[in-house]
Image (tube, rainbow, N blue to C red; front, side, top):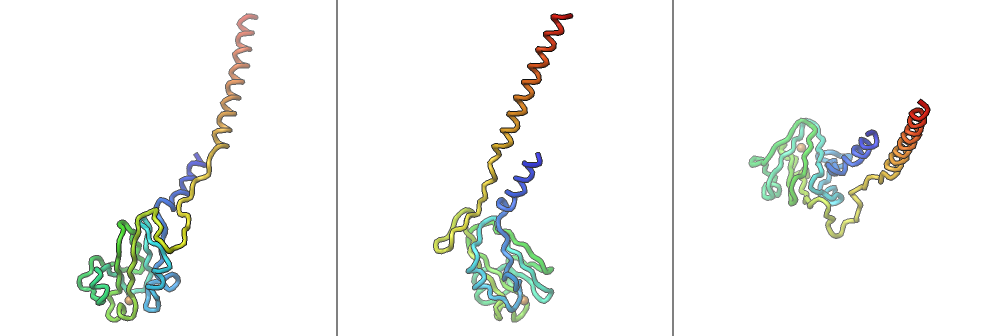
Length: 168
Ligand SMILES: [Cu+2]
């Protein structure tokens, strides 16, 4: 049971995908370079984006045209509060800007391309993302040994019972 829980705990991050902290140590701010940052990442379905920012910023998901023109009035979604986690659910492009006046034009804009889970886009280094859980041969080995021990004990008991039956 404990081993099963451990395997589950190890497998869980794989199941839920990688977390991408937007902008790395810069977070979501006017000093970040989100084009360079995005190019350093591979975004896959099931991964999450984490935006961390102070109260002068927000996160708007927008379409491509609004991304290009820094327009937040048609935002698809708005996020605020300083910590926003967005799960990447479909493959394709996503666009985010900061709706605070002037911030998008100063560089607070992020476009990413989400790829299907398990695919590796050409040109990026191949990194194994699926960690196979350690094989549990020792567990079944122990189980079969204890099973044999039980059989042995039962056999001895049976012999004793038979002996007593004859003696009695
Ligand atoms: Cu901002």
